[in-house]
Length: 112
Image (cartoon, rainbow, N blue to C red):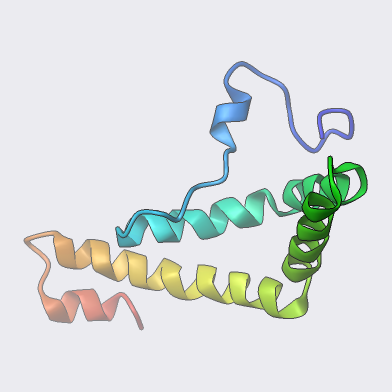
């Protein structure tokens, strides 16, 4: 990725672009995962393709090949973009509800 110019090399660059984990139950952390996955989509595909070709055993290669074909499917890509749009709106509304000075009508006004 560095050679192709897709990523720039700088101090701490690898920490800035890590894929967010979706393991926590907080809503905000799930929303952060989606843009992170979109940002690293091409790199994730390349890594899975490399593992599918050069994996240490057939099980690893088969799992990587299956994961690669799954994330390259139309349904996955469409769902990822739809989730980003929907969760972006709902995340904004949730943050508005958490602020004590915003009432429900004002927060609902953000949706329209």
